[in-house]
Image (cartoon, rainbow, N blue to C red; front, side):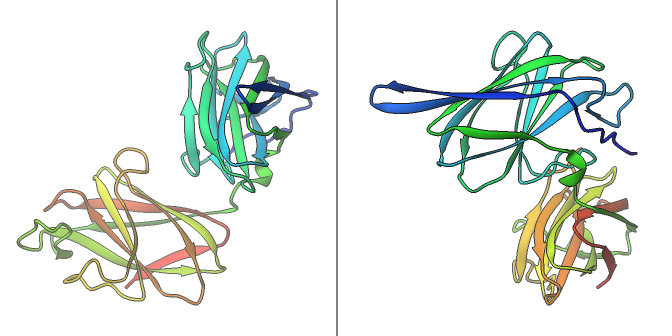
Length: 279
């Protein structure tokens, strides 16, 4: 599907104030903005309208970010980028009602020199209205509205295959006495170096591994770079990795439970094209 990327024309206002408590100086930053039916919307039907707000801090520390609105709001905080098609990527935290009165509230450690994105949306579909963001911490938070289309990763790819009872098998766990986990080894080919997100989509409970240079089924810890079980939706793996064009990477697709096989697909979101071939 596609997501509406209409830039919001609502005028936002920001203000800061500083208070001192028990020897510590806290700075409060507020941002007044709104969700309208011309802001970006999800691809769901019915849609949920949302605002994407970029922010950063000048000092490391714990910051409180809360919402004040007459509408029932939900909030999501992302690290570096937000892709509305794959909204699980880079998600740091989400909240619905911790602020009371159907408002979200975050108490979160933020690092300086890091780009964060706050996505403000509503609990109910079609809802619109103004809201106020109140942020308190050791330093002021710099907010700015963004066009989500500028932050999204550009290339989406898909690879489909299956595990069968004749597929190669290995011992995935240390308690495995005989090789009983079916797997498929795939060579990862990329066009440019950068961050790649590799996720499975299957009715199986999948497990994924990425190796550097080679994979030895008798020594599955050797050359292992990253592994994942359930960071994707519905018991699917989600692997995040910086991939260099000068290195060789191998993806192992297997299952959480032994003696299980079936179809699967691999979806990727990336800065460049990516393809898979049997290793």
